[in-house]
Length: 335
Image 1 (cartoon, one colour):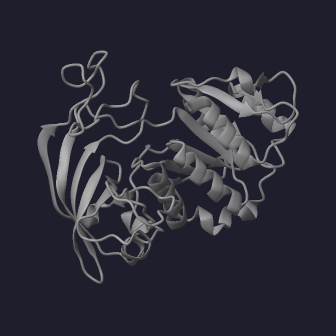
Image 2 (cartoon, helix red, strand yellow):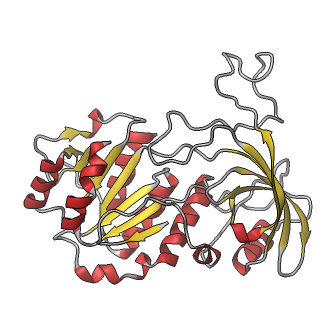
Image 3 (spheres, rainbow, N blue to C red):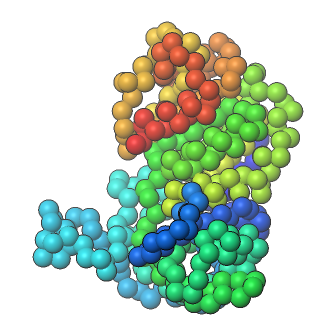
């Protein structure tokens, strides 16, 4: 979801205008279960289903079988989960602001994919035929499979069964000084693949004001980038992207609340008394990660962030590109 405001905090929501997603590049790569052949699969690994796709939908109340807390062997009789059992255990520990389910329900039904993008991809790239089993997931919902029941020149009809939670979210909230548009698209895609669910985009002295008019910051462009990331990583929970051009107002009205419930780490401008990267370890505790512009924050800006509670973190003498730095820091903390 996209939040663009300089008016202070807004209610966190992953809701998204589905009209944007329907016009996004919804490239898909379903799993061809039990098949071998010459078809080359692209990098996208999930068909993301929208509310408008459903023709029939039922939550039948059947609780999915958990493979967590089943004892050392798990599953039935200590033999581990059977192939028919569904992994529908909620992520643990739950993360603040993350939707949780006390018990998953099996979602079944029929969907029709009729947009040119997904239909064309299924037809020409996947070459799906009736009977194929595809990997699917419902936007902000469960993951499962779908069997192709029918194909017309304009649509695919799928019978769907969803019973597995998406991967647990990353504990990292990213605050990113707006980079140029190509870099921003790359970073947004990468952090979506890594499971980051909240991104704040801020201004800085090193960020030209003209960059805020870039097309990549439009709702449909952000939705497209997020969608492609979710489909690659087999996830369904849409990240929330907040645009905060007025950094001073953001620092005063929203940032203190973020830091009150998370550890603040800032990529250092230059080596000094910062924490080295090798001292940052994988964590499930909330972390707010701050990455400045390519030209770095000014010393005054760094001082302001330090006063709010950020600790600097450094790669040492190496100066990394923004995309590499974000990937390395988020990966270090979550993978």
